[in-house]
Image (cartoon, rainbow, N blue to C red; front, side):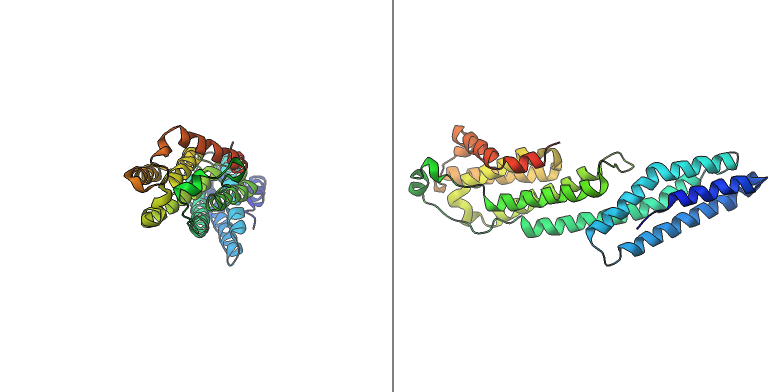
Length: 281
């Protein structure tokens, strides 16, 4: 489970001591470095086989470290050894390592989507009448919605897993792995919930206001991670819920956009502050 770049670097340094006219062997040296890197990647791919997401993230970390540090050192040493006659070495080494890094992280993101799909569900929809809701006292306030708690826990677990394996490492494009993972998880949560709300509109209609407030809370909490496409879906779904509520059949009759809606969102932020804190910078 290790990309042994230090060994590769030591081999190149030994060649520097052993070869007297190394610039004449630049092609062979470059080919040798490429073959060693390829074998390292094959070993890492074999290590991951039949293992968990943690193993895949470990491989991603090994590849990222190699791309950001080891390969730079090897290329510099080979360039010195061959008097700059190995211009394609960096791109060749980066290419073979990047393929493995990209494949492993893509598989991990697919696993995140599957986990989110299993957890981000509305669950049992309880329909309270208007009188029942209005007669609830301050000590009988509704707890943090279980389906939101399950959804946030999925995102928080994803963050912890990536943070533990990859810390603040970035891809070659400059975006951190943590942000990409959180983006995938957040998009999946909001998209799944929106699609379920749309498909179960007749069931959720009596509490359309409540669900519109939940959705508003989700958007405001996860906005920095949500793609434009999912933000648009969430906005459309919330408009649908508000329309269903103000049509006269919803319990709150449009409170989602008024002071009562703001108070409800603030209450959700209070009840779910531990999740919000876990997702903060």
